[in-house]
Length: 103
Image (cartoon, rainbow, N blue to C red; front, side, top):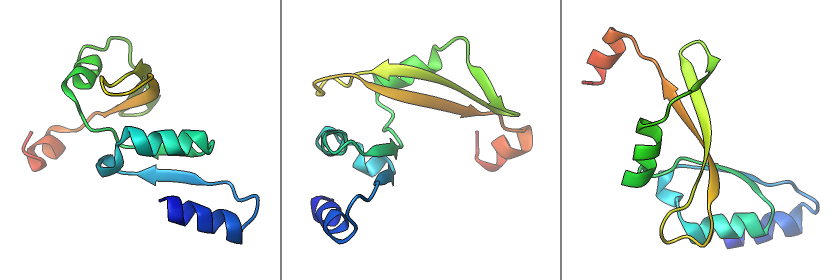
């Protein structure tokens, strides 16, 4: 990622970089690099037990679309130096959709 970022910055001065990655890249070192460069990023979080408990026990979800609820939280993984902001989403599925995904 460092090489890609350096190349983008050198070839396109003033470029605004936004990053979207899946949970395979959910890593403190990588997130710190994005933050030090002031990049905007969206990343799917790995579901660690304490994060999953935050989501499972949450009361007061906010409906953002029909069938989609969300809430914001600040969470710090044990190995991190600081907390980060997260948005959790839940999607209401029909019984047919649930059966299709085997629960």
